[in-house]
Length: 630
Image (cartoon, rainbow, N blue to C red):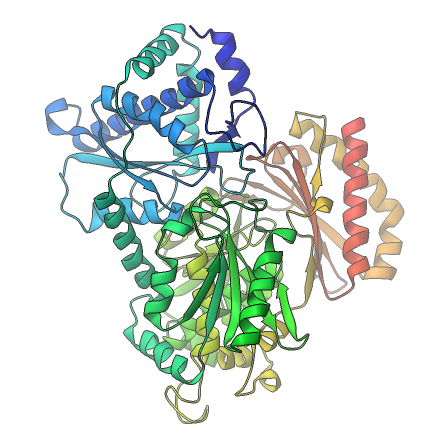
C-alpha cells in the first residue's frame, strides 16, 4: 500500500498549471523513455485527478441546475490521448475511478487536442444531449515535453482548457485530496480491483473526427461563404501544396490529410503513423529539419509546394517551414514570425469581409471595435500590425488559458476578437476556437497566398475587392511592396522588422536556485536601477534608449508603471524601453515556466541590429544571475 510520503514524493516532481498537469510518467524516470509502464504512485495520482475532476463537474452541476440531486445527472466525460507510450496506462487508471463515481464516459482513443475540444463543444451546442447533464473532457498529453513525460488537461464545452481561475480551484482540491490517507487507499483499491479492458470506440472516434472537421471550416471561413469561394477560385490559378512531418503525433489520426485535400490543396507527409516519434517533440530548431528537407524535395518535383508544418505531440501547435523564393530553398520560420503572419492574414480577412472596412479606408470610427489578445512576450511587431488595422492590443501572462480568458472578457466588453495567441510559442488561436491549431495557422497563410485581387473579383485593384496581401500593403503604408505575382517571401519581407529571442532557444532558458520569484524580482530591481544609472548614457548613444517602464503580467491583469518589481510574483516581468520621442523600441522580459522547471528570458528589439538584441539579452541574463546569487 502506498504511503502519503510515496505520493508526495512523486507529486512534488509534477508541475500543476492551467496549461496542464505534467511530469515524467515513464516508470524508469527517463525523460526520453519509450516505456508504456507507469509507477503505482502515478496510477493513484491520475486516478485521484479523475476523481477530483468528476467531483468538480458534479459541484458545477449543482450550481447550474440546483442543489436537488434529482435535477441533474452524473457528468459525461470525454476521454482522449495523444500518442505517448504511457497514455493508455493513465487512461486505465482513470476509467475505473470515473465509472465508480457514476460518470458516463466516452473514450475515443488517439485524438488531437483541438479535436477533443471541438467534440466537447459540438456535444453541447450541436448534438442532442441531456439538458441537466454537465459535460467535460480529460485529455492525456504533455504537449511539447519529451516523450517520457505525460500530463492531464481538463476542460468543459467552450472549446478550450479550464480557465485559470477554475483550474486553480481544481489544483487545490487535488492537492487536498492527496493529503488524506483514506483517499489514497480508496483510489488504489478501485484501480487494483478493476477488471475492465481498455477499448476505444471507433464510432466515437468518427464522431470526434467529424465534429472537428466541421468546426475547422467554421473557424477558417468565419461564416463567409464568399471568401471560401474566393479561396477555391484563387486556388485554380495559384495551386498550393502543403507538407507535414507528423512525427507520430496525435494528428496522424486526425483530419489533416482529408481536410486539405477536400479544399483542393495538395498534401504530402512523413512519420504519419501514430506513435512514430522519430525526433524531439518540441517543433523548434532541429526538429523542423526533416520537414524542411521534405518541402525542398516536394518543391523540386512540384513548384506549388510552398508550406510545411510540424505539430507537437497533442497537435495543438505547429511551427512552419516555407519555400523562400529569395534564398531558393526552404527555411524554418521563427515562432514570432508565424504568429505575425497569421495576424496579418486574419486582420486582412476581417477587412476583406468589411468588418474592419472603415478603419482600413480611413473613414472614421466603426461600430464594432476590434482587438487582439496576446501573451506578454509576444513581439511588438504585432502591435505595429494591429495599429495599421486600427486594432487594439491587450496582453495577458504566458499561458493559453490566460490569453483565451482575456479574449472572452474583451468580447463581453463589445470587442471583435478574431485572432489571439502566444507569439512566443508560435501558432494562433482563431475565434471561435479556443486553442492553437496548425490547420488554422496553415490556412491563414494559404488565404493570403490564394485570395488575390486578380482572378477572384477583378483584374485590378480599382475594379473590385483587393486581395488580402494588397489590403495589408495598403493599410501598412507599403503600396510599393505589392505586386500581382507576390510570394511568401514578399509577405514575410513586408512584416515590421524586429529581432526577438526565440522562446525555446538555449539563450532563452536559465536554471535558477531562488524558488521565491517575488524575492528574486525585488533583488533584480535593485540591480537594474543601479545598472541603469551606469549604462543609460551608453544605451542612449548606442541604441537610442532614453527611458524605461516596468510592467507586470499576472493572469489577465497587466500592471503598468510597476513600482515594486516583486509585485509581479510568479508572473511575467517586462522592462519596456522607449526612444527620445517616447516610442516603444525594445524590451527585456522574464518569467518562471509553469510547465517546465526553467526560467525563461528574452529580448525584443525594433529593427535589424542583432547585436542590440544580443546585448540586451546578455544584460538581462547577468542581472538575473546576480539576483539569484544575492
